[in-house]
Length: 216
Image 1: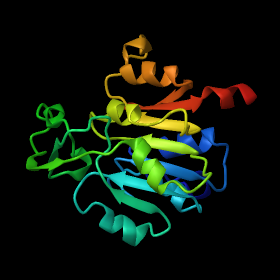
Image 2: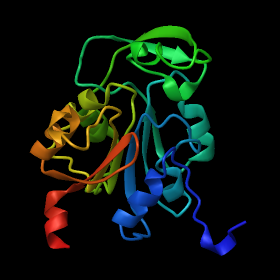
Image 3: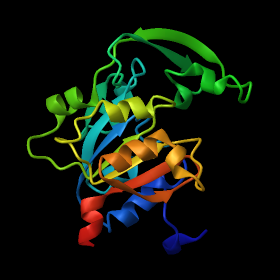
């Protein structure tokens, strides 16, 4: 209906369009998507893939990378749980795959149509180990997307921030208080790593590396 005046988003809350704005229309780049879920649906990275970008997609759900290998062959697609925890973790699988989680209790209070159908035990890897193995040599990470339904902080803690420093980060944070951001462990952790909160959707925080912000 709006034709040339519209912009198509694949993200759940338009995060991809915000990222595009923050990246100032960068034509080619590299992303890392943790909790990638689906190659197109609710994806923070498919918008960029269609424009020639490539990156690493990671999801813990068994079989999750099959559609990525088909629809996103330019990407590096990795089936793995990511966490700072080293012991095996119970992973809950729902009838809505977007809710698959290491924290099933987060969804027992919600809509009754969402049902936990299966549990599997997975041994997680750190984000550092994944990037050490799969990130191309000297590749800059333009943005990191993290949406792992309650395990987000542990994913961030599993990175080597001295070695891998994405320019932008989009991370899910459902309980963020905009009047008191310091109550958020994710906000506090990323601020300590040198990031500035730049934008917010209902459930996602978007951070910019402070050294980049100072050069603009």
